[in-house]
Length: 159
Image 1 (cartoon, rainbow, N blue to C red):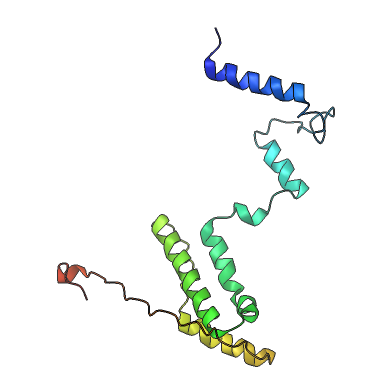
Image 2: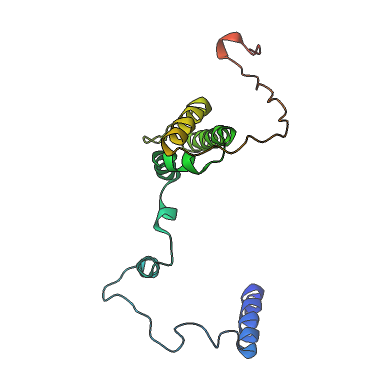
């Protein structure tokens, strides 16, 4: 007697074959391009070689963050106003801190980015490019509430 889960899967496959769902698949009827020696990762290597997969997506998050930090001048040049540069830097730093919390023992770290530094760099990039900055958004932004931080030497008193 066949396992009910296996029977359900086999039935689903048979129905798809009858409907013709597998008739026009790319490479149908052609042999697989298998390597001469045993390589358990042949399929991913084949996909990488064909360009189907973005190689950067396979990198660790910390490496992606460091690359993003190195390209910060180009990113700032594309931002329309100073507050967008500040928001971008705050978002980048939050992602850096999330990665540090997720991987506390990693030896490579991505740098945090101060929003004031991002605003200053944005002004410098704009001055070099002689672009006219876009007007700042006119929507009133609610003030951000300071997050209470506990210090271990204060035994739980908020600072």
